[in-house]
Image 1: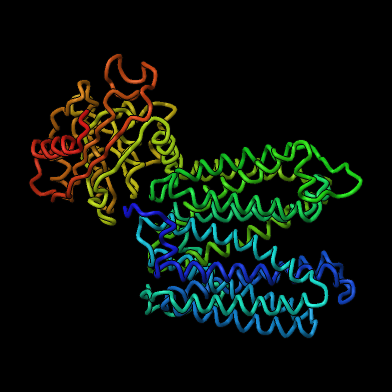
Image 2: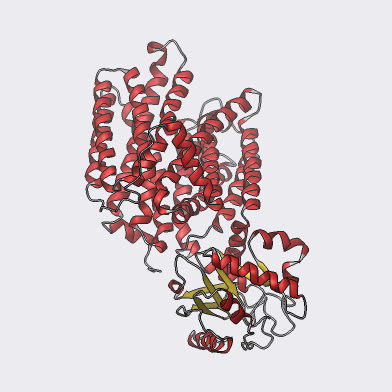
Length: 630
């Protein structure tokens, strides 16, 4: 790992100009959109036969429509061509749109502005796959989570600042339209200037033939997304986040006015709290996960979103004053601190939830069609946001209060999370590991780079406690299949979890030769598919703190499938709650807390001719070299 803070990326040419370009793009979108929506709200009756609500919803639909029409094409272009050049072209397109918007503002043509909102949707559609597709090419693996955190923070900060600036400028009597026109053109030009400094990256699939049919290509890119089960579940999770966010953000104005008795200042305050929460959670992801892409944060975020959403839903209506209160007066009312904390923490846990999902999609997707998978994600995001609008309209029209709508969303959030985690127990296992290493243990990993990024590898580690597999699985970026003693594998409550997590049960020849033979076959098959398999060659957890002799089973595995072997040593777990020291495992209070644990990895050795005794000596030397013997 680099060990440097994610904030240092902002000062580096490979990331800083990109960050500014994407921030200014999102900022400009929201300046333009909010100014236009306020124009519609105050002038729709004069210009259109429809109500302002109808025109506003039509405008929102026009902005989302391009994501359905052009995402597939955008993903193909981002994979075929060099991305920094594409970003500059997209920024030039943005300048052109904003120049036309300035003219429309000068001519007071609201109809033309609505049409240009559609073009802004096209520009955002083209930028999305490039935005997330370029990050893995600009950043290292240990920077990807932090970089995504900065991007998500920047996006929500841009939404907040852009919405505020658009409203402020358009509301200035006499010169509001002129100020908006100057602002959107100036911001677009600044974005292009930033984009000129983005370093070039090689195209990932330059020989691809573009399919211009949006229907067939959309179906194809959804097929790319479904090829990797975890990636597709991550995309479902990301889309669900935007579903939840769309409902909460859309209801804030009426919720503030009708239920909280607050005016526009309170709406802005609550939007700011939500945005600050998402930004804070996004930035904290890197620290909480130790610079690793840790999907264990996703259940943590989902639990928080559900709990604080439920608490917000239970807040009783407060709008009893004769007039609407400003932000300062409203914050002095009883119970407002609870509401503010709920919205802030709802956003913060949303940040914990969304950033690892984006980073996982980027990391686990085949680089050759990464941008197309991100385009598929954008299609599903747009679809879920449309469904969110339809659901909210239907629920509120049926007589439900906004509080009941929030309650429904929170319950649905828990159900969707359960479905995702049931389909992919890796999320739950990573979450358990994350809880473990942030409550009982303090873990340091040394030389994790010795595990190759791709290809089959066999991990061989000493066996100190009942949570060795959780610790190792949480410290290694690649998914690991653990070879597990069959009696532990068959524990009724945990059996389905172990099975879906890919654990391989094993027994000795004397206990059950069929289980042993099946284990060798599964290990060989997993290694043949290029997976990572971990075995504890001692065959049992140490009862003395010393490494037991390695059994010859590992030699038989390597004879069947000779792959690289990475020796590992766990130290610091002996004497902890889950070790067998003293009264036995889990028979005494879990103290002392915060055991310092070290996982040290040695250089990979070729599997040909490896014998158990020599491998045992290597692992023992690693344990001694860590400076913390058990």
